[in-house]
Length: 364
Ligand SMILES: *Cc1c(COP(=O)(O)O)cnc(C)c1O
Picture 1: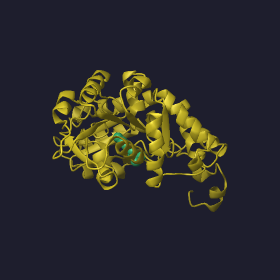
Picture 2: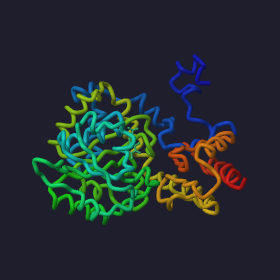
Picture 3: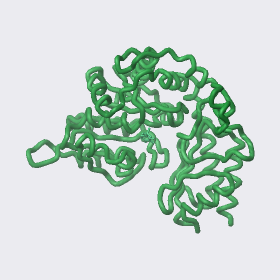
């Protein structure tokens, strides 16, 4: 249907429709980035008021930036095309070239951003052993290096909320407050990769402002659980976000009538935040069904079900292939690790089908 030339000309033609539930549509559990804009979101996109955002004249982008900054109690925010760019802008804001950022060894910023901190920011990174959401501020404190002509001075720490490779775990607010004290004592910055901070907010009931006040910079994604097609924001002080505009332009992220994308984010903030609770319930249901097979890597807190297959007879590619043949798509993270992610485009029937397929595979 996507190849039908007519549907390409019709704004809400069949090729553009979100996938309809049915036996032929795969249950796609690979990521929460696979969602497609809903009809309501598409209508908002069609009606967006726009201007040239490089001139800061796109009213929809300006409104989104003000709205998201206010949600977290920050002075300012900047729209960026991707979460990776938002993170890398923040890292460049907090850490000068040749100096150091500390983070978890499994952090997105050092795992899935193609070495950008080093290649673009000239930033040295040092990592603590991967602990997901079980962050220990004392371990971080012990790693911080002071200024000195022969050292690599630590300038900032980055944490991830929720923790992606940490199985969607949520760092407790109390731990983050301790980490803030550690950063203050050392006089260094604190960045939050909050691609899925919405999920932490819903899972722990922590107000977004309580997260916002702990960090010098945050990045947040509109294109993960919130279901917008594109977009992230970096948040900080007015002074930092002014510098961030220059860094974004330097990285090729200055966009023009991008209100057509910002409006999708504004729509998602209104309609898709509270419903994340449904994704969490569905992930918990998937996890419960898999408990008997001993394949859960850690308890499920949000929308990610991390699988550790080392104690069962499967390797991750084998599982993914067997599941795909039965219409269920899962993500391979390593030879024996895989991931299931729930999201906006799945319903209860999809989860039932995934449970049926996966339990049949694990039983075989
Ligand atoms: C997805 C994600 C990002 C941003 O990814 P992009 O694909 O660049 O938008 C950043 N951090 C985490 C933890 C993520 O899961």
